Amino acid sequence: MRVSPMATHAPEAGAPEAGGTAGRPRVLLAPVTITPSKPLTPSHLKGLLWTDVMFRATRQLAEVTYRSSHTTYHLCEQTLAFWEFLDRTQGDIGYDDATEEDIGRLYVAFRAEEGRAPAEDLRHYAAAVEEGWVHPAGERVLRLWTAQYAQLGLHDPGLLRHQPPRYDLETALDRLDALGMCLDQRALGGPVHLDLTRFGLPLRQLVTADGRPNYLACALRELMPMAADFDEVVLLYDTELDSDYQQLARVLTALGPSVRRVPIGRVPIDGRIRSARHGGWHDTHARALLDRARADHSDAAVRLGMRLYFIAVLGPGQQQSFRADLLRQCLVRAERLIDSAGPAVDEALTERLARHRGDHLHVNPYRLTSSLMGTRRPAPGLDLLSGVFL
Image (cartoon, rainbow, N blue to C red):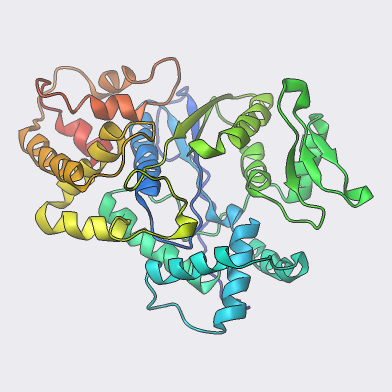
């Protein structure tokens, strides 16, 4: 294992992202993170764009923290085991010139490998991550994503920052135990479970008998110490993770805030939903889509058009396959919307955005973005486009 720390070690990005007057509600947006081991797929883009519009719209009305720490989730077994696989099979090679597809192909090979690395082989990786280390392959992917975030106009919540959770694993488990939500069998050589059976939810393993924490355990380390500081916590995640996020929401609710779950459906490719672990990105990954879009459209139109397609056209479900022709239509429509937008709008931006909140504090990205799509709707104001979509 080569221990080379991240080039950027900025302070934890946990403070509210928008200034405001005293008394404004406080909202925490906590989207599921993406393992930095592959290209950004259409499903990833959908979640990222959905979260970005929610963040930028909601911060007009509330104090918003967008928390997405890769540091926290590097400790998951699939990430540590991939890094061990790279060092074991590739040796001490450099990744500075690798594309996300190059690294993604190695990830596919890793997922196809039978068996798994012994827990003991991953412990020194985990200890290094706690100190701010990231494998060179992971750092390379994060740097590539950073450039794509910039092209898409996405808020960067700290892809290259060392942002450790405030709780270590033992503290998180002790806190769960104090809440009566932990079944710890380690003294008997067993695993640790989240125990929400009194709420009608099944036992959920958090830590294996040999000490490996899963994604949910990492999420609890991340969000439990933060939850009480907010009026509302919004969890954005892949629909296939709904069971785990029901459990996470139940724990966070016990700590005080209102918790909202926002499941976002994946994007089928040619009618099939496949995990990125199987590859098959072809020409639908973020870099390919951006290269084609930017060849024919302005940067502003690309940012707005991507949001129109991945949010308003695809919607929250996962019924529609990715269609390049519909994405092109959205890019053309975005050019027209930008050209027709004007500064004169009778209603304040905050009032227009508040209509898309429903009974919660955050703005619903689907309702807001869809409001731009009607053929007879008035032209959007420049304040809305520049403040939320561009």
